[in-house]
Length: 145
Image 1 (cartoon, rainbow, N blue to C red):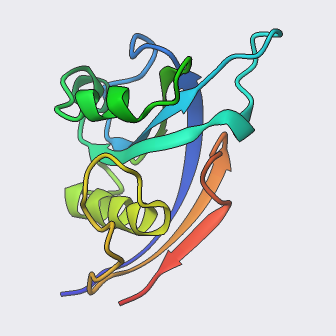
Image 2 (image 1 turned 90 degrees about the horizontal axis):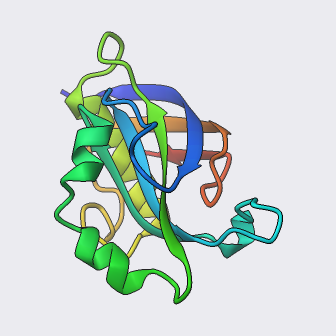
């Protein structure tokens, strides 16, 4: 059975550690970034390393098996930073999160991980609206079967 999902992701971050990231369900990004002299994180310096989903974002990031890939692919002199957007379990299940993850990955093809990097081939339709601090993502994505 195919699903039609519409979700608004309210992105938080960037964070240089996972201490302030909740261990709730949602979508995350791992990025290569660099602070400027004012302590800001210019979005034009971001390099997307990975996009994923988890039932507990903090735990997933703390124990991520692709951390070595992030380190290999980050820009020299940059720091790995994280952004996240919650997808509460009372509204979305793991399948919903995987559909959203696949749509985002198929549009951005990050170098770490291969899920959906060859294109969106699911039977599910999804519309994603990004709010908050979504860069380097676009404001919205639509993926259709």
